[in-house]
Image (cartoon, rainbow, N blue to C red):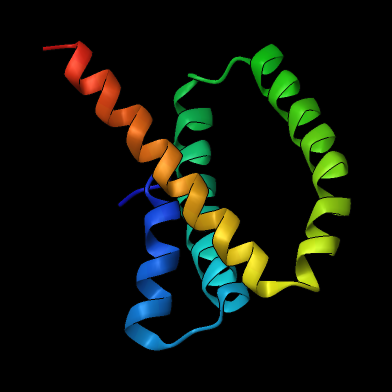
Length: 105
């Protein structure tokens, strides 16, 4: 599925292996980190990395992490709500992709 398909892997791991949501997310994130690091290294060695863009993305990642940690802590105490929100996010993304595909026809 590549890096972008990671959100599809989590429910698949949960359904096929019986993993908890947290374990499936951690497994998906580990593979995404490995793929991302390999790709980033390859691009850097090829000279295709824009340092300004990397810095902007790093700042955005730190800001997103800081903003998301309180929410993650609250969701950590309510696994059912986390699953419902995650399923809702998948449905919203699927609807968006479907609409974009239909408009492109």
